[in-house]
Image 1 (spheres, rainbow, N blue to C red):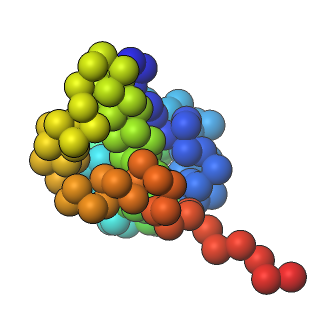
Image 2: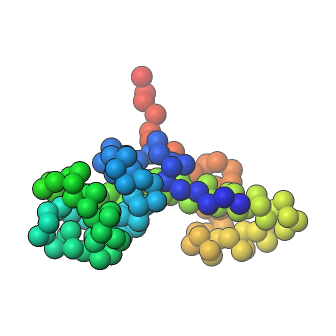
Length: 140
């Protein structure tokens, strides 16, 4: 089974994250979000933030971000909507894989719900497609 990435939920990502993907690629952007999501960073050579990014991820990523954002202050979103959608897609894929290999649906839930830190009720809602959509549809 293939591992899903931010690329699979690109349509739910904020504009700044799409810009980061263009500069860094998906894998490095996902690392930045995992480490710094929900915080504001400043990209200057002598700033502590640059050093932190360099030490936490790597110098190449820190240099690319500094060159692109220059001296801007940039809020790194947590991407909760996209990550929740990604979790749900991965959950469904693993559930389908287990059931296809002969595991009962209920036993698959017993295995997967603790792994994804969700209730079985949420698991069933994910499978039935009743989880909230990423964006509310326009009324008109």
